[in-house]
Length: 211
Ligand code: CDP
Image (cartoon, rainbow, N blue to C red):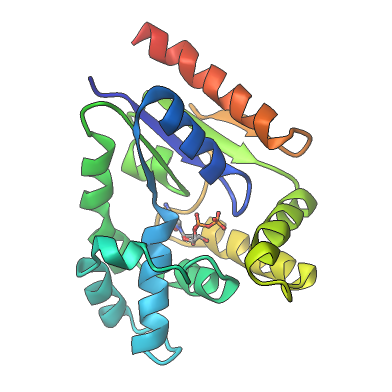
């Protein structure tokens, strides 16, 4: 059985939590595609000494391994910024395309979350969700998440990171973040995490039972 769920949306809208819950509920494999760009961004910062060099970023993307995705420093705001910069490079996106496409076709079902899943990676996905939340709610959620690991995280810095990335991600020429026409929109601003997950699971269930 092949069944693909595509989840997109801006930074810290709840995509990851929802994707993991869907994967667990339906037994699907899950790919957090943001990790691919974060891993390339992190390596680019190190090897380019802070400068983004397109040819080197492409090479890093082509050579990415599972171990690169397991680094525990990929979640911070500096890496997120570098991720969104390398994500705007067509050569980096092209280098990561096939891996994501083939993951989405796994037997047993797959759920992928990112920015271009419904538009580029899985245009034929069985379910497409676009998860949003207000700027304030997203910043607070990410602030709480980062503060657990890094207590001196500042809300203002988190707000700036999300805002800059949203603008860059939505305005780039290649695979910009957008809600495709056939995506189901889910605004999680006023929902608890449990309620947001329950709503997303119910949306997938409707389609899954028909498949
Ligand atoms: O967790 P959060 O929503 O903050 O970010 P993420 O999903 O880990 O993605 C980090 C960055 O990678 C984003 O700001 C995008 O620039 C980029 N990205 C992308 O361009 N396309 C994707 N499919 C996933 C992430």
